[in-house]
Image (cartoon, rainbow, N blue to C red):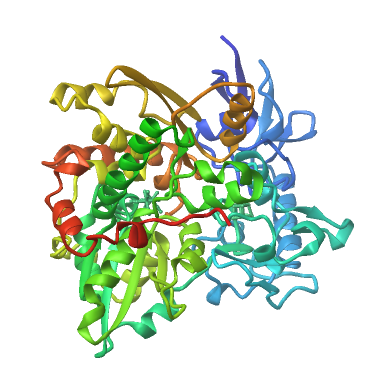
Length: 557
Ligand code: HC0
Ligand code: SF4
């Protein structure tokens, strides 16, 4: 058995990739800024340095454990170096902590407090913010960047977008887009994954809650909120629960915040399933463009527009559930003589971009969704309103759009859209086929999942692409001649539950979110979208003869 000595205590080596993992397993929280197990090792911040028994220093993140090695993690020299690194970082950092969006969640703030830094001995040339506000999804402040490279690596390695990279040299080095353009003019798809890993306030989610507060509780306004599937399993942790489904409490909180009507985006996901299944059946029967790509993820749509414009005709013309619901809400309330304030609570930063697209504005140029607020912004609003989340009683969503099925709820996890569509198109409507589907490869966090589904006398080839990085793999396989009939793409790893608008989560916490969404499906009496009694009412009412106008869109220019 291999082992090493950490701070005079023997610790067994069990396949850990680096010293850092082993040290953390041994119960010592070594500080880091630039280490993420999902990303490549960069070794830039040097906070995780350890000292060996001869006084040599090594970065724990980039040193593999070796049998018999003896290291120390907390010597006077290491403490001095860590404090010095922190002081140097702080001397080059806009320290407006109390008003920073990252206040209380900033790694630099946390480590400065932990290492007892109360005074910085050096001048600070970056004491004022330097804001790039050009994106509707994220806000950058170059003067809060500590050059850890986490954003650069996530954008390149995980999302395969490459919108940002290091530019310039020495003290002028910074993270920038090509030609130093504003981020809003770059090929950024707005997925926000860079903000999700940024340890400081250098990249944050665009905060729209201040503007929203001003619009709420107005006499002449009907305030309507819709809540996305993935939000309900990501709020509870923030208030000290596990990751359980707290949709009822979210509804109650939104009502106290000032919304007149609260709906569940899962309801509109049922509508999307109806429309997308129709479109898919039609393309199969009439030789339409295949594979059919799903269209509900806005970061995927932007990525396809940037990188694969040739496949835009393959993308479903269905609007996302958020936009379908926005159309239905607008039709329902527009005759009431009041202003409609249409708000979507989403796990996603790219949805802010989707809402702002010209395709989704009404005849007067007003967006159908006025505000998209992320789960994180919702949590801030709940806290700001003084709502004691743990004490409020759960409430139900409102009529007339108060019914949804389990198919609509599982949209929030990778594979969920596919599973919901298969439930609809499958000719075998037995309970057994529903149960079996869950075990046929559509669930799980793999990057690419493939399955064959019997449909009438043939089998359709279905693929679930989890995370933008895997799009290229599938495109190359298609170029090499492989055929698929239906492909789901969700830009964020693991689907909307891993959206950048959600509170930070480990991979285990994301798994817990997915389990809780599947459990929410189990609790739904109705499992297939066509069983939702609202569907017939909508098709016979608001949507009659206007399905195409209200529920579809074309991204092909
Ligand atoms: Fe999703 Fe959606 S499932 S994209 O992840 O399709 O954001 O949760 O609301 O629109 O329903 C996000 C989540 C949604 C939409 C739905 C889809
Ligand atoms: Fe890259 Fe997404 Fe960040 Fe844009 S939002 S810079 S695409 S990681």
